[in-house]
Length: 259
Image 1 (cartoon, one colour):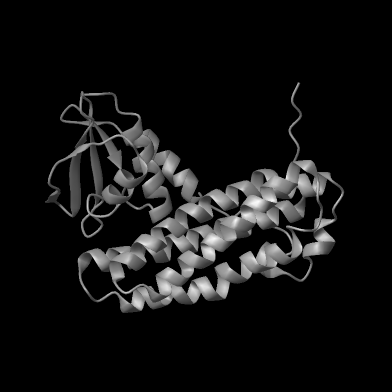
Image 2 (cartoon, one colour; image 1 turned 30 degrees about the horizontal axis):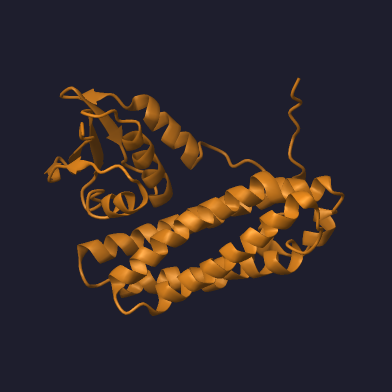
């Protein structure tokens, strides 16, 4: 029988801070990408993203390198920490590309990759590294005391009032249905991270010959950016219609070919 245990306060605080970092990174990346796709004036959004990366994301990564990755060496954590140190080096290279790339589009590609890498790294830390370090006897509360760049500003992570972004995405999943015989996927009101995850999941579930109707806000056209990212990451190729705008919404039909 599996016994469910409640995460310790320090693990809960670290996970909450990870969620906050990823939410802010996704929001700023989405604003930058939207500005890039809509026209040449994206300097302010890029500057805001770069400022966040230097003030929040990189200090977080540097503290983890210094405090966690060499704190305890066990067979379970050695390979993982080595891989995560490599990921941190990749993260720093992507931050440099976001800041110094010669074109806004190149910077946007790097920012998108940074969101994906951060998502993977945070899942590794929350689900594997931090619980393994604590199970090995490391006193994380004492080690991380005075390091809000890892655990956030609060001593304990209390659940926030109201629905989370994930709850909202789940609710939208229940609200999805069909329009004109096609599976509809509601992407409205979601941040970049959850919109991308929701769209990728829905399209990967299509059988050959099936179609989905993606619905997003006007000015947030999924077919102009997420399409390129998806085609770069997934082996399956899809057929995309021209986006249609009506009543403040953009609708894009996507079909999984039969061959």
